[in-house]
Amino acid sequence: MDFIYIKIPVSETLASQAHTLHEALEIALAAESAGAVIGWGASLEGVPDGRPARVAFHRIDIEAAQVDRARAVLRQALSAFGVAPGSELHFTQAGAQMLEVLGVQGWGPPQALGEA
Image 1 (cartoon, one colour):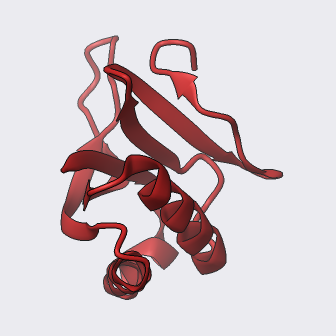
Image 2 (cartoon, rainbow, N blue to C red; image 1 turned 135 degrees about the vertical axis):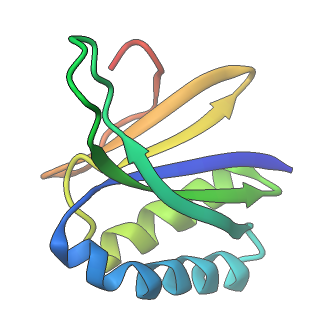
């Protein structure tokens, strides 16, 4: 099994719909035998200047049998749900930590973490 996580920018709308989003992702993954939601919670922003950290993202953890299949299902389900631009899909490919970011035109291409 592989591990994937999603980071979605925090908003009032997301806060009120988080449970519905978790269910939608779980249903989409199960329908394609692509994985399962295994957890979620708050993710803090990176704070290099010593300011107090704040919750910046809602994080959702996924366990996947096939990363590419799960990523395709997740991208489609997240877009259909209408998550905000700036949402991130993190995964590992050939041992490298990878990232895809949702922009206003859709999901960007995978990039090695650190090249963002």
